[in-house]
Image (cartoon, rainbow, N blue to C red; front, side, top):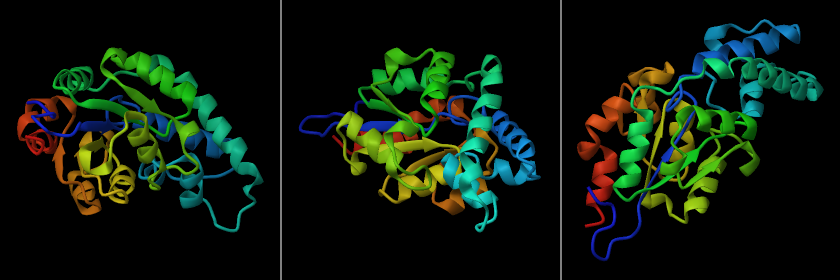
Length: 233
């Protein structure tokens, strides 16, 4: 499976990280819940989980009243980061994550992590994956003015690997990933390992669904990634 056949353009695969490659979505949920509690706010965990994957500012706008005093937002986001950092030792790659990155890289795709995580969190996530030799570029929240569902993070990842939207596929686990990619016309493969159902991901616009990186790897040739490779022949 080569993405760069005779006369073909370079192709790439962009990956979300939290919930897609690393099993961290519920840890983020708990960290946000604790940050809200510290600020005197009672936000249900189910609502928080459905918002994980958005940028921090976007998540607060979705979960908190529009007329609130936003001067507290920075403190809430800082608290989330501090609580999440206590979970760093518990982070684990999802089954098949490293192997999937390796296969995409060895097949000739440009591989980029299109993450809106804080840079310090992204560094820890990358260390958890132990796959830097298979990654050409990675983005953090430092690379975009707006978080998902805005497409800024994906646009930054495209620029980092010098590719166009029509030359990549995105892999993510949240509806916010699908919405962000859709705004650039990038097809998204949805993974349910972050806790979002196949039905929700499909309704958001995902082109196909797999349980986790291992299942996608097992079906790579027949997936949207495999079709992207075939389109360059």
